[in-house]
Amino acid sequence: MDIDRPDLSVCIGALRLPNPIMTASGTFGYGREYEDFVDLSSIGAVVVKGISLKPRPGNPPPRIVETACGMLNAIGLENVGLDRFVSDKMPFLRQAKCRVIVNVLGESIEEYCSLAERLSDVEGVSGIELNISCPNVKKGGVAFGTSETMAHGITSAVRKLTNLPIIVKLSPNVTDIASMASAVEEGGADAVSLINTLIGMAISVKTKKPILANVIGGLSGPAIKPIALRMVYQVADRVKIPVIGIGGISTWQDAIEFLLAGATAIQVGTANFVNPKAVDEIRQGMTAYLVEEKIKTVAELIGEAKR
Image (tube, rainbow, N blue to C red):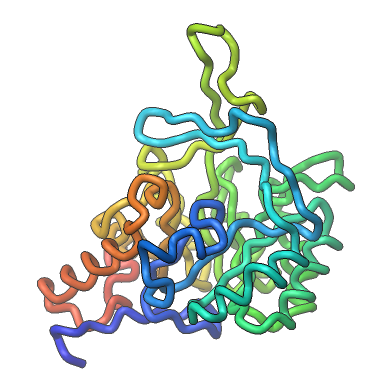
């Protein structure tokens, strides 16, 4: 291995990525929105906007508000639905020669299963990320991601229907995220990604009303990085499957921190709105760091803070 050309490749289950830098669902559209800024094939994997069986209009505006060191969003999982994603979005992604992870969401286990089964036959789909922060309508609206039993059940059900790598995206809005990670690992997940957004809100002092039409939204950005880093550190101690770190990653230094904490890969989210070239700059910075530190492979960094 040439010391001036370190190996950035990592594996998520059977999926080998050229580097550990991924995009976070909901922050990179369907990939095409960023083609003028980044070579999509150079990204470890493009995680597309969450997809449901049927199109979703999302929440009414306003649904984004800037906060100190971050943002709140209450988009409401707006998306084109599975059929249009496959017919309208996937042809471009195949042409772009990028690795595509499809984030999926539903209101019942059956919906998740149907999505996974159908996506398994779509050329160019490299993996599935389960968004389990959604409410289970059959259980009174309790989020799948707040119950170890439901998280295990949904992962196990999907596992039986696809050979694609399964990543389960975990909510931080739980008492013990490491136990949630263990539950989905036992259910057959190939990896976990964390953290999803924290719950927050903002109020206008002028109107004296909540700013978001939905009242509450998901907090993301640099403000949540210390919490995300801590949770990744804890989860990496508990599970044997790869951990994908998410939360406030804006620079290559942030990305390295997550790897040192035990993450195998990372996802860049809110930073894409501020700097559409963020994923490219993080990859370049990570490479320069490895060269400077005379580290031959990025895998050598994984969990180093624990050793």
